[in-house]
Image (cartoon, rainbow, N blue to C red; front, side, top):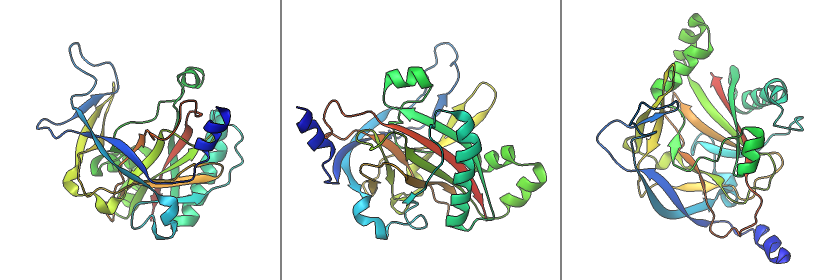
Length: 277
């Protein structure tokens, strides 16, 4: 049995059938409470529809996948961080590594790391570490409005005004903590296959502020990809929002039906940066 499990986990065949959770089209504006909802109100007011499709292994296409064209790519990013659950090391070491890497890779004038999430598919691990579960629906982290507001929140007023007049790009850098990743892998949608009306601005309601993300409605032209068995220094760069190209990359975790029970749970870290040009 152990040998069967190991054989399944080391299978290098790439493309996978999957089911992606999209938001069903709706007339009211979608909204989600990230605080306690008022009495009688649900956490969110939309419904999902699961669409069967194929998620392609981008490792087989690595030479033709670029951050500029598809909005994502895989890169090697060495790190000095031994334990990503030590917040001080993430903020003081990993942030600086990521900022320098993005600046070198994109040629940005300035790169600012400002947020990170730890995620785990293990309930026990989440209880111990405070990590979040993997996301399970197609979405994009920033809209035109929320990207601009985030810059105003991060920078002094005069600098924010100056930076907003030029190109800026929000990038998510996703890494396996304890790879290789077998199930709940992150898959991304080729930005060139996404139409503007597939993106539905959605309110995020906090105790003290409002945010905004894009939910995604189904389009048969969508092209979904993932990188099989991410491990070690593999880092997936994802364009959350590019002000010049008006580009955003929908993404979600997905269940691989070929992964056997008993596979190690996914554990990952994502760092968000904004690059100014």
